[in-house]
Image (cartoon, rainbow, N blue to C red; front, top):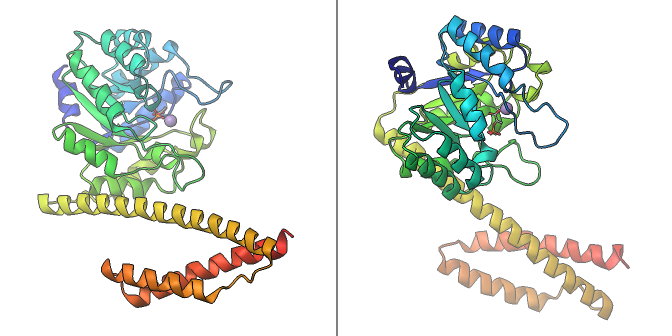
Length: 357
Ligand code: PEP
Ligand code: MN
């Protein structure tokens, strides 16, 4: 690694930006110029080979785009980084002097591919960033790091781009902050960069997610930027102009945290994630409880029994108050909680009695 790249690689915060995909020579050059003009960006990113969820979408310009990146570097002085997923990608990227490689989320999940990239990099002195796998599996993420370390690579960093989940959530990829925090615990010296673009999937939350990562002591940001975001050939919804990026970076608060404040924020994020998990489980359990109530409702309907059976309810409440108090929960809370659950249960049973007859 030459001294110039070494200096950039060691910058904190390290700011990487550029389009999701290289599209045309002019687009790459213009983006690079405008990013360089902000004076706030340290490295130019661009996807050359794009792993797309569905066929028929733009799958990257391919090797033909690599000279554009080289030209952009020569003109602006910004080192470049691209995603590689195969040995051929690695060879092509090296041939065109790409400075830093990154492994994408869809590649990190596949040990065959990671090993292929690692083998292609044996004896090569180049920094590599590894995105988290799309699924929340830290062993896969650590495993990819280990494969590259075993291939002799010394400069490895991690990119947190969130984890995919089923159904609609506010994020394109849920940040699950406790997972990158755990990776920081496992690899304390390793660069950890946040990619708010792929976490958010939109422009509106970028600022908040970036700030959150800074507060959690991440070492840098990778944010997608485009000269005409609405007309980008991939990830149009989440890209911002270089000028907007500059504004956003200017508004971020780079706290001079002392260690204890960072530890506090990290601990808080971990505890909050634990609470989220428990709340999810509680809701799932309450949902299951209602399904059982529905079944009871069916029996009552078929046997012509009243929905409310006071004795049974008093029995439930007495048991819960005794158990709850032993767990440090107040009697008032238990009664309010069970009243709410009971009302929901009765309304489910009512539905069964009258709707489905
Ligand atoms: C990208 O950086 O454009 C990309 C494809 O990201 P990810 O691998 O995180 O989905
Ligand atoms: Mn993208």
